[in-house]
Length: 242
Figure (cartoon, rainbow, N blue to C red):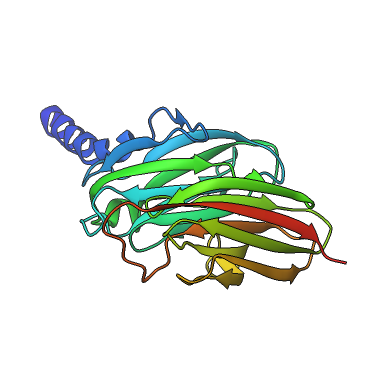
């Protein structure tokens, strides 16, 4: 009888080992330092720790290594220090999400897949936390973007504003001004203004109302297929609307 009990307990232990493996030591998530990992049948979640501040806005990126590989349904979960889930976001393919943290806290951020242990998405991935550069009225920022990356900026000021854009080079990124969805697709970016076109070298968007959280994004347009790396230099200028 004792041997039977031990055998049953041992079997239960083997059965829950994969789940226990998901709750190991969290890895500190450092802005701008990508983490590379692999979601497998047994290792389906990676926990990260992040010390966030009240009203801080973060962007999270989870990119499968193979664009059309088996990691087709990745997901990202954010929990507060009490274990309360404040965001659960999944998407087909690459994930970019934004969120404004509700309080000063030690957050747990989990890179996983849709349906967790019951899911079947597997594959290598890159996970990164991005701190968008803050835009201020009356100031300009310059940068370089390629079809292989995205750029994010943040505006949380009180003043209504317009956003002016100019670029040089052959690559024509899509420029959008977005709010953060907090309802049915929480974490996604909702465009409130956008411009794209190979003949557009300068444009002005707005007027946008102040006292809101805006994410400005530059990226390759959805149907703009560049098979080689292309870049362009750009300037963004935020102007207070009169």
